[in-house]
Image (cartoon, rainbow over all chains, first blue to last red; front, top):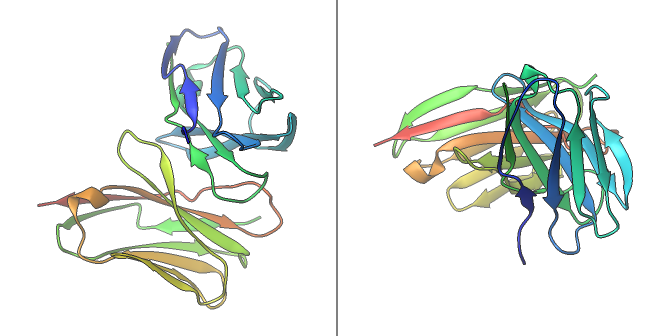
Length: 113
Length: 111
């Protein structure tokens, strides 16, 4: 089976812009979670989608949003980018929602200038 | 709320030495997962522990879940350069349905 794929792998944006990141889960996986990883804050949970519905949300401002499509592919959007949004954004998929083994993608490295 | 401490933050060992990282919680855990992230890579699932006092082995890696289910450890025997990376615990109290990660322990192994 192909693993989790994320596009793009690298992105450079300027403050105030918005960005959309994409994630394709492992075939058959219906849950997609997003994480932000920074040297200072570590791995932080953003949100989880299952069956096109957001099931869990972390402590991030409303500028961070996401969605999931009927084929389980997911996108996350960050609006009005700030310098502090520079991070590695990781997507993970699993068979079902909630606390279970997560399969991570390679991540999208976002740099905000 | 749940407080999870992962120690140490960083450890540098010579190849062949042993290494242990600990994950300590202020509350009782339902279960716990461990992940490894190589430099420049993404987290990869290692194991999940569920039972009190559980011990699981994967080659040179030994995972333990405390009797009180408030702590867990990962021990690597005779480290190799391939063990380099950051090891994260991801504890679950049973009330939260999402995966949250500890702060991680970065392991450096030199020849």
